[in-house]
Image 1 (spheres, rainbow, N blue to C red):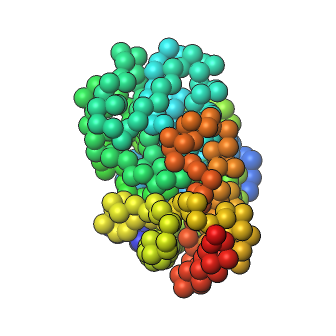
Image 2 (image 1 turned 135 degrees about the horizontal axis):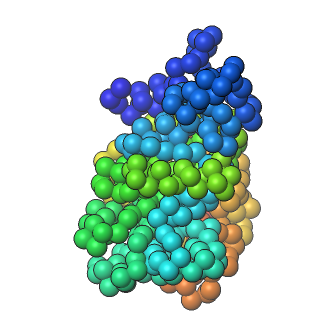
Length: 378
Ligand SMILES: *Cc1c(COP(=O)(O)O)cnc(C)c1O
């Protein structure tokens, strides 16, 4: 199939579905049995045979194949979380002694993984302001083997110039890995721009219903062969049931993203009209829309505690991407442990709110915001 919307629905989990069920059943099993030794041997030659769920399972494979297909990648693997997918990808590329380069405003969990774990394994990790021309080039060393970045950053929604980053990396023969969690392949497909590996916290938009913790890594065959080995060796596999739930969510990715981004655009327009509110909503994510995340800084004109208290039905939830509209407070959650000067440099202020716009009617969201803003106004 050719179109994104169609491909998201029609990916099957292998052909050996003897009962012809319409959807893929849940293969909630730790292992698979064999008739005789010839049959056992067939596992090693037939791609559609399975042996042990940590090595592979129809449900986890279906999820990996779906995301790979939507990302235009030859291969993928599903893992237990976004973090394990990131680790599998990084460990496929870097070895002790290597150097890797990341932007300053990378996701907090990723920042910690790189600075508190990889450095213990003798990998040097440097940050650079990726939005400044020449900063990446200047930070590359002879040991640099990986440049890691995100399509859209958290929480200020800076859109990475992926073409530029990939061009610099290719010049130096360095691999590029992109976290595409916020943008999703509906808006941006980093592989088509030349990325080597693309990673998702499928906990977010890929699953879309806030009921699973799961990750997916896709990429070129060269790196995926290594990454898949890491997933097996380190036991980073996701459970069949969680993969199945994620597949169910993924089928509606296109309609969700289209509607949620239309709603977000309308919320961003409303917020821009409010006095003293600074809105961070990208204008240049893709020609299909600009995503469903809206961040805004209430500045000094509103009382932030009152604002959160008066948000009606909109809950404070430190995640994103569900069908419900939610808000989070970066200063006290995701960016809590970052030193104050860096918080200030990154724009993580007391008035900063991150909103994940859901599937409710956007008028409903605007009304809730209007009430909270009018009560919180100083
Ligand atoms: C949530 C998130 C992660 C981590 O994913 P988990 O599923 O929580 O392990 C990584 N990157 C980004 C951009 C995220 O939003």
